[in-house]
Amino acid sequence: MRRSSPTVVLGVALALALPAAASALVIQVGNAGTVAPPSCPAYPCDVLSRTTAFQVKDGAVRAPLEIKRSGRIVSWSVTLAAPTSAQISYFDGNENGASSAALAVVRNVRGLSFRLIAQAPVQQLAPLFGSTASFTLSQPIAVRRGDIVALTVPSWAPVLALHYAAGTSWRASRSASQCQNVTAATMQVVVGSRTDYDCLYQTALITYAATEVTSTTSTHR
Image 1: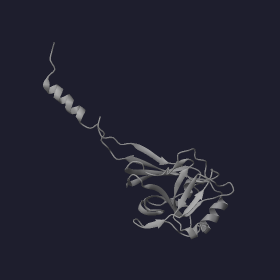
Image 2: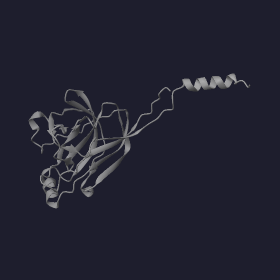
Image 3: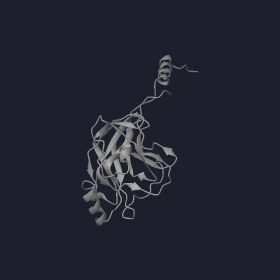
Image 4: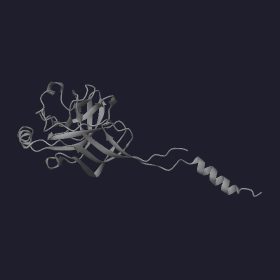
């Protein structure tokens, strides 16, 4: 019977002791359940306006837009309603111009206070109404576990899906005294700034998502 070479045996032992190869995952960060079409042109035509917002709960799922594993956001998407020309004219005239939005990343500081970590370039949405639009980031955004993917809307965006149960909710960067004043500009746009997200709105989903490439990690066999 041939004996195994000591060198080969040693090599196998070393291989077993080494960590497995590093790996990265491509993850969709978004609402967990079935997302209904956003409102408009049906009545009421509710839109997100002049604020930064993020989903708090999607039914029983808490923090669906929270980062679970550190990595980089490489793209984001938004599903847009198809408002009528009259609705577009109304919102353009009352909500600071043509529809637009940008992906943002916020980090909880304390209580309902969040710091803006990064924001992607603002995108014009009107040419994309009635579709799910995707935007690749030329400069990916580094995120860590616990960060939250948010949406900043400098004007207005038809991205609210309505008629969910009361457990479905989202927050906006408005003070408690401004929750009903949706025309006031409360966007969080200065990177590094802190803002309170006092206002909680129920029964609606914000129809946006992001694609993350997670950091590589090594796990022992």
